[in-house]
Image 1 (cartoon, one colour):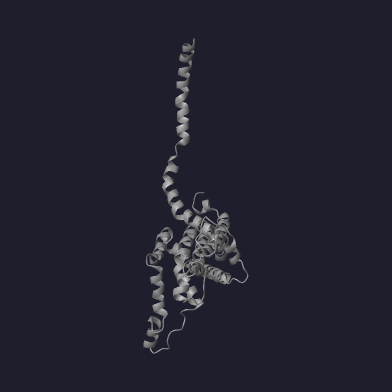
Image 2 (cartoon, helix red, strand yellow; image 1 turned 90 degrees about the horizontal axis):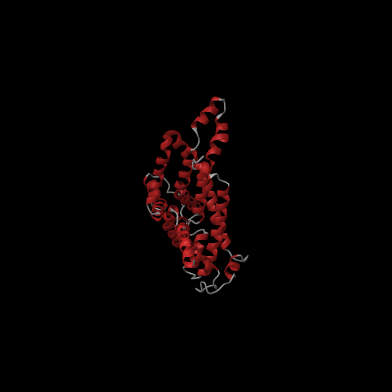
Length: 309
């Protein structure tokens, strides 16, 4: 009887075994998308998350030590938020430079992007890529080129004197030339998203509004600007994030006449050898930029901007 019962139950077990094993294999098996994304996830984890974790850990380490993951203190943040600490002056300068850069580039880049779309139409994105070509040259090389242009007895000053005119103005090593360098450096980062944003405006809609008697200002205010706003905001956000961490412009063109926040972080990690303080400052700046990015992205309709609907 026992053998008979075992014989009857065995086919049932064999019948259910493949289904159960397939379920386990299916549960353990990664999808095709997950397997394709795994190398990218590992790369981001090693190249992006790991440094952030290290910086965050150092920010809670004992000041002027390398006791990372072995100590926990809030002394570094207390030092930063001390009213007598002047590091916030550098932060205000960086935010001011970034805001002025965004505002001025928005005014400068919009007519260029509009002209690209009007003249080149659907090829405007390709033509705007031409503005990215200077990025293939080192930023320091390009900025030192401007130093040679503006320096005393340089290109501008020497040319004016050769023509019998007064020499060029003394513009180097001032906050103004620092702002000029940032405008020059970050123009492509504002222009390219703005061009793409204006390319999303349907010309048929503009023509229909014009046929119905709408004026040029009304069309720009009610149709073109709202529809192009996602690209404009992306350009402004990208430019602000890059500009707030700018260092080379203040060093090379500005001659450190103004100390920006990225320079304070560099000083903490190099000359001062106070990695915990530099890490705490980097964490505060990163948190500020992260909150700003999340807020702006929450206000954007990325699906419409990417043409998904």
